[in-house]
Image (tube, rainbow, N blue to C red; front, top):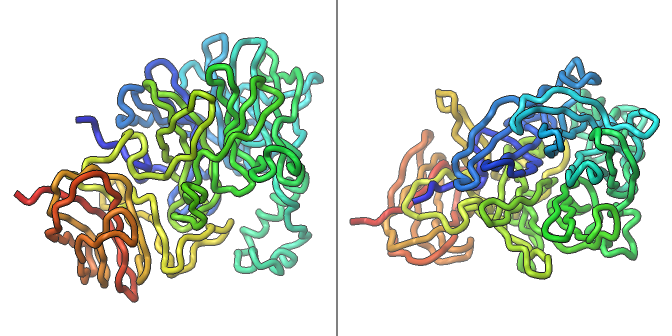
Length: 499
């Protein structure tokens, strides 16, 4: 039996969002930025690369640090974070990593003999005069190498005008910043200066064979303020450019103005005529089968498409620890239809497993893909944590080099759910929890049939066991809090046959 890879697909202690998946040789590599648990900013760590055999997407290996912040000549003091990268292989067999530093309007390039690195600084993308290209706020590049005459880099960041402020005092007058500490507000002021001139569109750069010099630029997808009357009007480009060529179509995957969703557009050309195709995934399942309310806490999203062993997947990320700054990579299988279209897919716990997980195993609660508080799920605001009465996925040290990720602060009315599992008459359930209150176990949704009730009353983690009616078929497993004034924590759950 194959190993049960789950979402998030990397170990629970790892935070690699903005995942760009690529197959090189017989391995699938993921290149992304690198957050930390309880982070105070995006991308606070150096780049790392993870990979797994194409034939077994459960055997992930970390190759260690691939590139450090201080390797960039414009960041010798490592004061700027490394934002989302992308990688391609050039005609010389080497691997070129395109990246940007936080709020620095330029795209840098590093190079390595191996996809996993280590990478060495190469240069910056430059115009024909040799000057570093800084137009249209270069940002989170996506790259596609076809041949030496067709090397494409996609970049852009667009939004409504950002708040105008000249001082920390000005920022404190605005609701979204009134509770932020002064050091954070100082950083925001610096950022606003850069963001004052955000992109007008997603821009396609055609590079020369040196992998760095611009031959031509082309606008290909409009941002919010320029999208009226176009196919992008309802889902304008915002950020997170990712590009693939599949059969005779070019697919631009991007994060829309809505922020939580990854969309796609297609064209027969790499640098013109892109038409909006649809939404691939939302990290709150907004829009999936008409759903209008988030099924998990939402914030930004970034990812890309990859084919591994004949199956296509979309990589994306979710948010943990109650902030925008502790993101973990997830992935879902999808189908590219004969006409090139992609139907929206659902967030699941099974992800790269490719089907329902076996119910007769024990799973960490952090694989739950649905998580809602007493008043539902909400947007996680920039530089603000979730309200104190809201549950979140978080972690704690276990006394070893590893950590235990769990769901924290489940109060009356809260819901968490994992999908999907293949049941075969399992009628004994295990739950590991702590706190005080009543936890209902339900099938399929928070309103589904109740399998049993767990009465939790302990300060420390405790294993609870309950007999349930035999279950068969494919189902989701949901936990609803019937009563808990001070909150409960959920660490593990699992099923087995009572024989």
